[in-house]
Amino acid sequence: MKEKNLNVENETPQEESLNNSSRRGFLGHLTKAAIATAAFGAIGAKPFLGGKSSEVAAQGLLPSTLARATAARDYRINTAINNFNKTYIGPRPNNGDEALYGSRYFANYTKGLPHHSNGEVDPPAYQALLAAINSGNSADFEAIPRGATPFRKQVSPQAGFAFDLEGKDAFSYIQPPPPAFASREIAAEIAENYWMALLRDVPFDNYATNPIAIDAAADLTLFGADFKGPKVGGQVTPDTLFRGSTPEDLNGPWMSQFWYLDANFGSNGISQKIRTVSAAAGGGAEYMTDFDSWLAVQQGAPQGQDIFDTNHLRYMRNGRDLGQWVHVDVLFQGYFQAFLVMAGMGVPLDAGNPYSNSTNQTGFATFGGPHAATILCEVATRALHAVWNQKWLVHRRLRPEVFGERCDRASRGIINYPVHPDILISLNSGTRLGKYFNTANKLLPMAFPEGSPLHPAYGAGHATVAGACTTILKAWFDGNFVIQNPVLPDATGQNLLPYVGPPLTVRGELNKIASNVALGRNIAGVHWRSDATESLLLGEQVAIDILQDQRASYNEDFNGFTFVRFNGDTITV
Image (cartoon, rainbow, N blue to C red; front, side):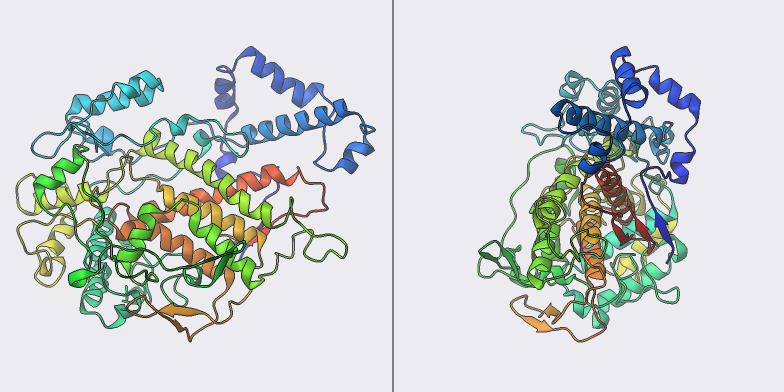
């Protein structure tokens, strides 16, 4: 693995591409007061070298409260200037579908807007959405037409405009464009979504012998390099099915140990069993499987409630359970629970923590448990701002439930949508997806009554928060620590059984819980594989940027956080 040192002065290749003319153009929009403040902090004030009181004292500044206030001001201003100097200011590309199909907008997110009877959005309604995004005026967002009465509301379309007080600004992040509507890669992604729906009620640990899982692996293999999921020898196997792509995702059980091991929230014992949707008649309900209900959901009409299994709480053991968990979770919840599990297991601090080998001190308000726990919430809010900026202001990617309808219309010759022929071949083949979707339609069955939430697909909020929060935990704790007495659930989800296999490390299981959450949203039908994988990386970068900002604020002797990124590189921040 490569090792990198990401000091606050270092720049990524993306950041190095910033040209001076772009910066000058941006500065032209700043107020005179803002420019004066920036100049005073960067040039007029005595430079502040770091966060240590000892450094302030060396400059002859203590004990003056004014001197401390000046140092605090300089730290904040210089950090902001540093972030500005690393920012790429330029166009942020999307996949081009909106411009390509702009007369009908059938390849973009349109949920909650008025739709025609053929399932396509009313173009003036979509143009009103674009006008609000381009103006940024709250009144324009209030004027966006709605498709149903009563109606569900659009979710935080203005959140991407929010400013943050640490880390890089949401507008400075770039996610690569998602696969285009007509591409073979998106055809492979929707094929995976169909197979995920078919396997929702099959325990993950039964995939190796399940005939549907075996068919799924064979079908996805036929998409070759355009299917980006993990493979063994170029083949998708039942064991690699629906797993993430981090280096440790294929090690051990499908689900992370952090879903099962004991946790205590202070004096409160936390059961890892969940309330899940009904297992009656072999599984939970499937929704939006006819065109009328699908269209009502696209118009934003409210839907019914989940039907719960009232007899038992269960350990998560299949896609249905995981889908329900990611349906109602608090976004940083899984990683806070992982933190509690690690604290209870006595996982040591990372060797770079200034208190990992201290004789006389221990961490608490800094570099201790409260610091780690609260920063999970802190990075989660910044991650949401960053990804909501991508969702609404850049990509506006359609949800799988809509692409499934486009595939249904095209496969039955109703509307000639330009979907890639390989997905139509699979849907109409008696040995591939068509073996299971040979009924009246080929709509994608949804795990939630309301289908996807009312915001665009790319990037994924859950995955971005997962990437940010697990990065914090990897920075804090020893990732090489081997988890003792690992377990896995039985097929009923009522009991835990001993796991026997290769050792499971903290780092691997943190990577795995991030992938579980990200791909769990896909299993429910509301996201794509590229939403998951790319958004983990976005969240990781958000966390790194915040750690960089905070590094100079500490008084302790501290050489930086060292951890392994999702791509396997070891870095020091």
